[in-house]
Image (cartoon, rainbow, N blue to C red; front, side, top):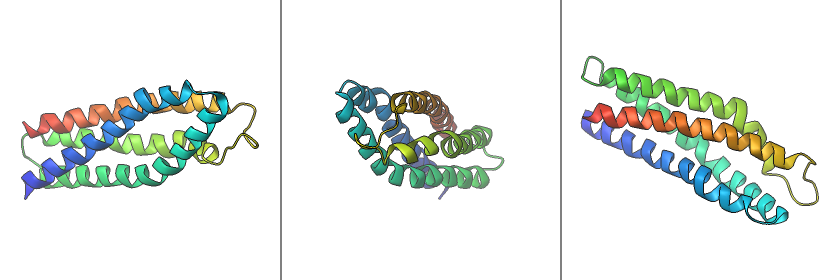
Length: 148
């Protein structure tokens, strides 16, 4: 049973990392290269779509990792899993405190109602997102190492 939890958790977290990595280093640079209205509309749509999916994914990843950490107490690699859970908790806190407020504003923007500083807000969101991607990559790396 523990092996199934370990593999499932690692796959779920790994997929989440892949999506967030792609957003940071593929999707957003593509959107940033588009003309203003297209970039704005693309980001707003992405904010609505991923804003609905990613909170569930983050919480599920944290819950699975916490379950693994609890179940694996005293096992080799358990400290790595606890550290990974702590990093995933940090990523949730970062999301709620830093990224979600910007995303909640941005997903409602249109060319007609966008604020004058929308590009600065998008740049700030990107910086926070890069940091969060680093945190979840570290958590995933620890989970993968704990499997060994």
